[in-house]
Each structure stands twice: as structure tokens, then as C-alpha cells.
Image (cartoon, rainbow, N blue to C red):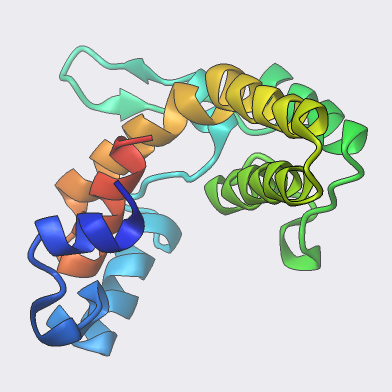
Length: 168
């Protein structure tokens, strides 16, 4: 199902309103800070390396791995193969969830462009790389990140987007 289908199924398009319409913008900002910025028991690191090295402590709380791990180097190699460059503000955070999702969009755009040129061989190559990247990277951790966000979020905006990531 597409994004609009999921929004509809989740009951978030009542009156055509996007998910953020259900929350006060200030509440969304506070939830963002609590989830991703301010170090607290709720902080969720949106990086592949943090999830790749994640372990559970004896009391059941997660202990996240260190940044710039082997998976980060592998992600950099894949990006380099496609001459993909992260936006400047993320240039040192290449395994950030947002950057990996941008890269998946790049791969999907390549596939669609090849299909529009009626070049099924090239479209298939783009699709294969997208499948590989999901299998080796995005799919190994983004669903867990999504589940963590959906569980810890205080706003419907982040609960919804966490559930979306969890479906990857």
C-alpha cells in the first residue's frame, strides 16, 4: 500500500488532515527533541551503526553500538558506487535514517527513470540494488528504529512515522 493508503487505514486522513494535524506543532518539536536530541532514557539514535551494535542489558534496556562502525563504511562504499552525496548537514552522518531513506529514493528514481526510457535491463539493475540495500542495510535496522519510535513517541505524528518505518 502507498503512503495515502496507510494514512487512510490509520485513520489519519479524516477531513484530509495529515498526521501532524492531530498534534500541536510545539508538542511535535518537544517529542523530536526528547526522542532524538536531548540525552535521556528515551533518546533513540537514528543511525545504522547504533542499531548494528545494539545489545540488551540485563534489565532489558537497549545499549546502542558506537557510531562509524563497519556498516557505516559499507554504506559509504555503496553511496560512492552511485556517486550519491548526502546533504551537507548530514555529510558526516551517512548512516542516518534520513540519509539512507534519501538514498533509497535515489535508487527508486533511477529505476523509474530507466522504466520510463523503456530500458527494463537498467530498471532491473536499479531494483536489484534497492533490494540489496534494503537487505544489507536499511531493512536490518529501520524497522527496529520505527518500532522504538512508535513505542516511545508522545505525539501521533511520531507514532505514525514509527509505524511506517516498522513496515519497511
